[in-house]
Amino acid sequence: MKIQSLILGAAIVLTGMTACSKDESTPAGKQTKSISISIANADYTVKGRAVGDAQPAEQVELKSFKVFFLNSTGDVIDLGTDFQGPGFYFDTTDDNYTLPTADKPLTYHFLPPQVAGVAILGNVAEDAEYSATSTHEVLNDDATGHPAYPLFGASALAPDNTDEAQHTNVFTASVNLVPAMSRMEVHAFQYKEAEGATAKYQKVELNKIALNNYYTQYTATIANYTVTSAGVANSLKNVQLDNNTVYNYVNNATAPWADGLQVALAPNAIQDHTGTTTVLATNATTPAGKVLTYGIVGKMPQLTAIGTADGTPVYLIGDFSTTYANGKVYRVNYIFDDEDLELPNRCVKLDVTVADWSVEVITPNFGA
Image (cartoon, rainbow, N blue to C red; front, side, top):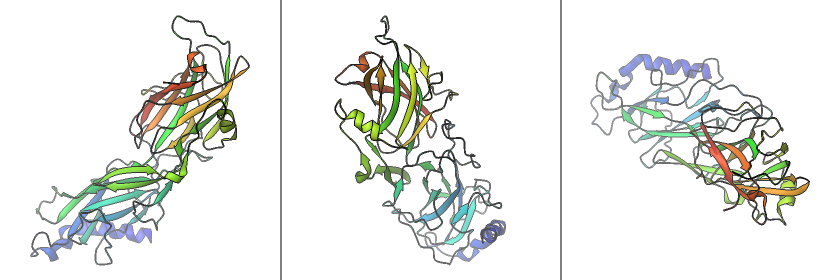
């Protein structure tokens, strides 16, 4: 079935403007439309990587996508059967699949005149519907590597300037697909001596880390061709953490929102979560060490760690000054010092770096 659809799409492109000829004498604004659709920011599939690997910038896997046509208010138009085109759902793993580019777009003819734009949902099921009320799970890495995150994009129509016959009913739509969530990678831990001071402890050991103040579900909305998202209120996991609650909370937290640590830091040492010596993450490079990964949406969470300092129980509550945005990879350096380990706050502002499903490194704030 997919092979037939793709062959039909190619045949329509070859017929060129012949397919539009029945509208030649129809007044502008009432003509059916021909639309060529491309995905502007997609490339061929990024293969899965082992769990714990950092995700390269601008590499989000696209396994499938579905096309929707919108009216001027952003509602989906039911096209029925009176149109020509290659179908609406595409599996990128199909041997006959070709990525829709500006040079080789998906082309549809005889679309209703009220079509004003296009929406595309990526990594969804064939029966998926476009709806601002649809709920999506916040995804995390699993045994197969990085997940195929749901992707969203939309574009208004633009006149096709390559149409030599200058038809008024020929349009293009170039869609950028983005995740309506973000990804947090914890790259490095460092017990840092304050400038000009000697560290209070010989060794700080951290044995577990957990997220707090995070959503597990979200809704995505495309309005004015811009993608936004919001956490689903009843999926928010948030506990007021202090000396009386933090140890129980972290100890009872479970994957994929918590991980064990094997971190044992002498002053100024830098380790990844396995206790292996590493370097701090930056925007420019992906450290070789293994990382902890968490899907996030709607807000920056707290990253809370527990352990001991020279045998005395300690905890750290990591906050962020960075404002949350969709489609980012937040690389975290978990850097703290003696002041951060003191009661009553034990809060750290964490160091972060960011980019567009690209990479930002951040450091949490402890306190303040």
